[in-house]
Amino acid sequence: MDMKDASLGPSSYAVLGMVNNCGAATSYDIKRQIDQSVGNFWTFARSQLYAEPQRLAELGLLQEEQEDFGRRRRLFQLTEQGKQVLEAWLSDPGTPTTELRDMGLMKLYFSKGRPTEAIRTLARQQQEVHRTKLAEYQEMHRQLSLIPEATFGLASLRLGCLFEESTIQFWEEIEQNPPALPQKPERPLEVQEG
Image 1 (cartoon, rainbow, N blue to C red):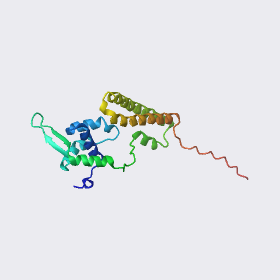
Image 2: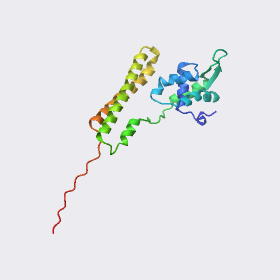
Image 3: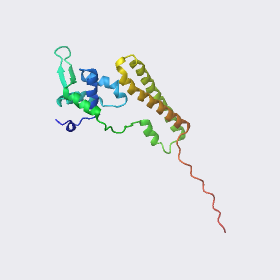
Image 4: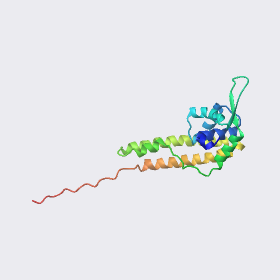
């Protein structure tokens, strides 16, 4: 099967990569691991992550085994073909540009004509949102620092911290100097000669 025809997207590669990193896992395990790692910089629909392992198994990229006892969970692991597809994707130099989805930035963009204080309030709210996320990343960094195998997670997390720090700085600047429409010069009164 030509994998280009199989329409593999970011969720496909996230699932393949997570199973490669963690070994045999249930759909729930995969989703939980993604939420705690790459889900911090790429969001996936919950339903998509639960359905994707089954789809990848149908494509021959994952192997599915059901436990014979207990909850009879379905465990997924990479097939040789799945390893090849993951390696091809990791080796592909074509990476699309970064997609930034930031609701605060969209609100700022559409704030034309709003009062200056409303823009400052938005800026303060966004600073708090990003300070909270930065604190989460810093705690994750602390925890991952204790795990020798977490070097790649730590490297990815570093960019997350830098992003949050620069975003906080951006919103601090907006709070101090909110964008405003240029003032129209007042027209001098025209004197009519009589």
